[in-house]
Image (cartoon, rainbow, N blue to C red; front, side, top):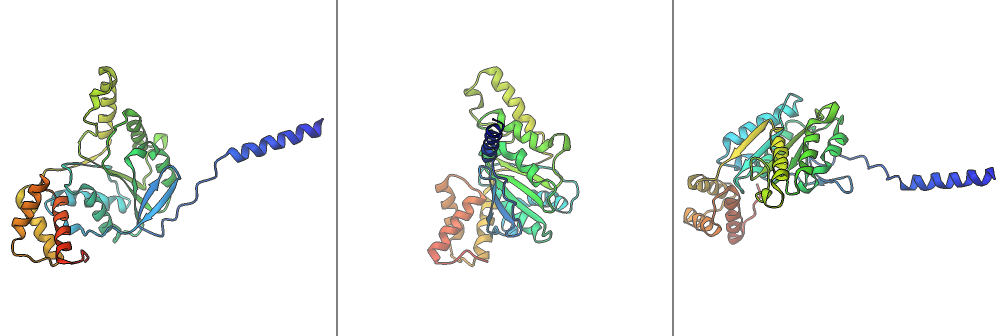
Length: 279
C-alpha cells in the first residue's frame, strides 16, 4: 500500500515538473547593439546597426541635442528621464532615437537598444525585471505607442516605469514615440460609456506624466524640407539640375512634407540614377 502511494506521488511530482515552463535562455547581448524583444518567446533577436547618420536628420537640431544629452547622461550612469517624442508623422522621431543611439553607443560600449512592439506593452514589467542588475545599460524603445486597448496597457507601463517597491531599474531608460502627446486613441470616447472613458483617459494621461522629458516635433516647413533633400542629395552624390522642383512635386503628390517624404524622394532618385545609398 505504502509502495503504491509513493509511486503515485512520484508520478504526480514528475507530471507537475513537466508542466513548469522551462527557464528563459540567458540573453547574449554581446552579438549586437540593437535587439528586438519577442515577448511571447522571451527572446532578444539581434538586429543590424542602424545605418542613418545623426547629422542627416535636419530641421530637428534642438530635439537632437536634448535627446542626445539625456541619453549620454544615462549611458554614463547619471540621472536621466524617460522620454516621450511626440508630433507630426514622418518627422523622424524613431529615426532620431536610433541614430542618436548609434552615436552614443560608439562612445559607451555597454549601451544597448531593445525595441518592443506597442502590442506587447503589458510585458514591459517582466522585461524590465529581467534586465535589472545586468552590466549593460538598455535604451528600451516603443515606436508609435498608444493605448488602443484601453487602460490595461497603460497600467502595465506605469508599473514598469515606477518599478514597484524596488523602483525602476537604474540600467533601463524607456523611450516612446507617438503622434499624440497624451497617447490616447482618437476614437477613445466612441467605444465606451462616459464614466469608463473618463477613467481610462485619466489612466492614460497619468502615464504621459511619467515621462520626465517630452520632445515635440512640429510639421516640417518647405525650406526645411528642401534643406533635407539637398543634404541627402549631396551626401549620396545625386546631382540633377531641377532637384528642388522635383522634390516639391514629390511632396505635393504625397500631400505632406517631412523627413520621411524627403528620404523617400531620395530613394526614388537614387534608383533612377542607379546609385547606392551608402556612406
